[in-house]
Length: 84
Image (cartoon, rainbow, N blue to C red):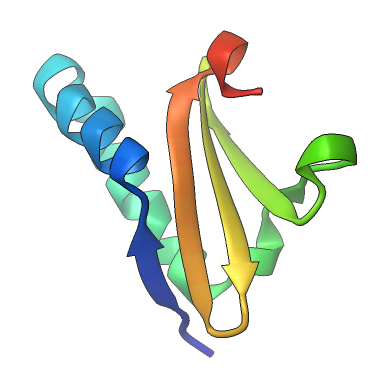
């Protein structure tokens, strides 16, 4: 089952900035977003304060998203030290 995708403003800003700085990482994340739409439960769920959110790690960057009914909300893309 495919899900709809909703991007937060924070994510969009980070993603555009990343496209200018690191094209290969940008393309990896773009490919992974397509995989998230196909099966969002596949990736690691977070705990404690961030319970209900999932994450994917790309080297030192972390993409955080939330699954709500048939929509995947992409929350943020940030360096690991700032993401949590």
